[in-house]
Length: 110
Image 1 (cartoon, helix red, strand yellow):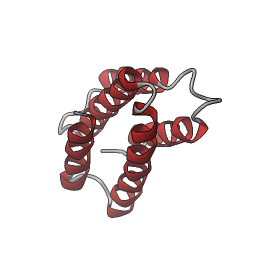
Image 2: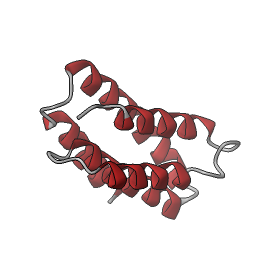
Image 3: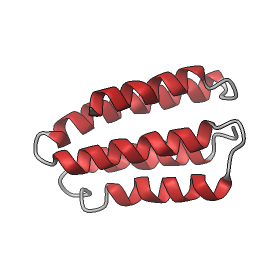
Image 4: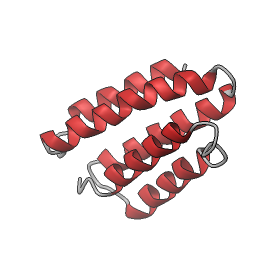
């Protein structure tokens, strides 16, 4: 399920017409790293890994919609950020990737 969701996110980013190529490349790179981190996390914290993946999907959806709703984007990004709280010590790279992804989606200008 997690891998399917990550594949959907990758496809959405790949076809988001309003993204600049540089943004798309950077977001896809972050997503690739997130896949690795989520894979590791899911071995010990499956439900949390699913939550992070789900919030990433919703945030990506909100950031790449044709008619973007700033309030929904803000709420989805807050959920994404909250989904990694508590992993700063055990999975610092995961938190770093999620924060970078959130910032990129927030500033994508789509």
